[in-house]
Amino acid sequence: MADPARIKTESNSEKSLAARESPKTEDIEEVPVTSDADTESKDPSSQSLKQDSVAGDDEDEGTSDQPASKKLKVEPEKKKEKRQKVDEDEIQKMQVLVSSFSEEQLNRYEMYRRSAFPKAAIKRLIQSITGSSVSQNVVIAMSGISKVFAGEIVEEALDVCEKWGDTPPLQPKHMREAVRRLKSREQIPNTKHKNILFH
Figure 1: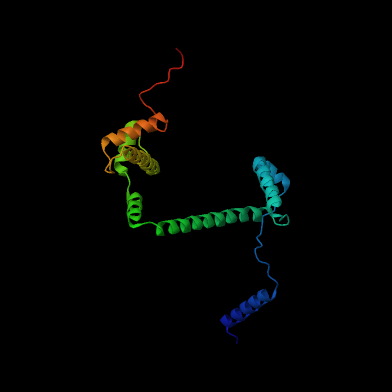
Figure 2: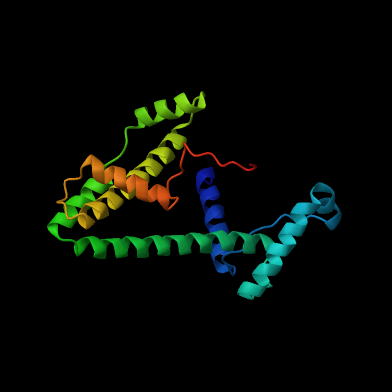
């Protein structure tokens, strides 16, 4: 009598052999077929959007024989590839730039990258002004904006220090002059001045 386990294995191997011999087509996906009436009744705005995006893909890629779902899937993949390529290019440019830094510039760049405002203090400040709790993303964004703002003031203060012929340890007078100059260029909002619309 034949062993049932062997019979199943032999029939499975015959099926897999037949599957290997049949011609394969790569990148073919099964797309559910719906009638025009079904899609119109569900969401007519999404159908028009799909038709617009398919028409745009036909013009860009010249691949009108691909199904619409395949075209929509290819587009995000291409965008991801472009983003990765741009990110890799930027990383490579930064590596070239950093490798050409002098020792002093490299130390300053490291300090710039490491410096940050304490998130707890930023969160307390925002909550005291708004009167409500804020998410961690808001705190991170405000911390970054504050860092850029402080950097602009310090940069302007260094310019003031150089113009006045002083040596670089910044003094409060340099910072005050930098803030005054940035306000005069309207890069810092003037909180005390109120616009009077009608006299």
